[in-house]
Length: 371
Ligand SMILES: Cc1cc2nc3c(=O)[nH]c(=O)nc-3n(C[C@H](O)[C@H](O)[C@H](O)COP(=O)(O)OP(=O)(O)OC[C@H]3O[C@@H](n4cnc5c(N)ncnc54)[C@H](O)[C@@H]3O)c2cc1C
Image (tube, rainbow, N blue to C red; front, side, top):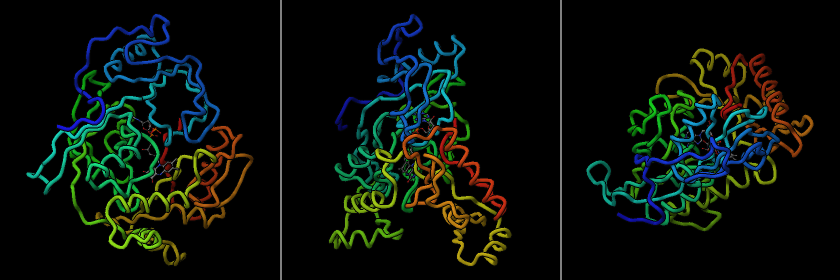
């Protein structure tokens, strides 16, 4: 077993005294902030506040904190890196921000399932992109196409993050979570996670599972996936003749940096809408009327449409309404130019939904959690 940082122990709750209910600012494994700004806690950088924000550094503190919140009859929201949340108002309850750390290779060779793969465990609070580079530095591949996605490891399974032809669910062996309904730690294997396009058991169960750690099964070698939007071109521009997984991660990071607005300068949550999935009949009718509309057939016969194309066709790309807007770089990305409120961003999102529905008969579903 290899250890690089403190080992996460997702299923070993320790009895901890919870001092938060007695008005203290910190206790074992957590720190409390009352009436806290969430502006720097989300990539939209909107001016919302949480009545109570608790940074959790040790998973063992979680059951006690949840019990205390329940006793105080206060709603709890889980926050990772805040890159997929839109706060349209203040949060009157408790925000638990997961900051737990730990990366381990828990099994070096899992040859019975995948030729020469390793089983890796990452704590929920690890930063996703740092984790991707850690796996690559350890000679493991699979996650290279998901480089530079903001956020935490714990949130990655929630919407089954995907980019450049890869979804994280492919590599998730199991998810360790605290089941708030049962009040117990659980281990959900790959099948139980029910991964789908930008979806999973965790998203469908809306807040029931607090993910504490994720196990990944990562091969040491695999065919690289390069057939997506300019990846080969970027590798060629980098002079990477025979690319490896690290070069792919680097190339994709370069493409993403060019294509997407940087949340550190322009607040955003990446793609604001999911690509809609429609019936073959509706897709065919739209294609007859709009021959340039991209269609992606799915294995079950349904058709995925490009939400960016639909939004662009309605003239929203680059539109600015006060300090809320649609990025000029990418029609799927709603942005905060600095002074927008969450309600303004949400009003613009709803306007886009209404317009696309009226023109194409297609409902757009938001990707982030809208609070
Ligand atoms: C510039 C930019 C580019 C992006 N590109 C992509 C992309 O290519 N592909 C993609 O799929 N996404 C993309 N995203 C969206 C986002 O980065 C991912 O969804 C990411 O996984 C969110 O992680 P987070 O830690 O920030 O989650 P948060 O925003 O903090 O939370 C998201 C949801 O997960 C829940 N949650 C968070 N942590 C936990 C936990 N430990 N246990 C239980 N629930 C939890 C929250 O309650 C919330 O419902 C992008 C975002 C930005 C800003």
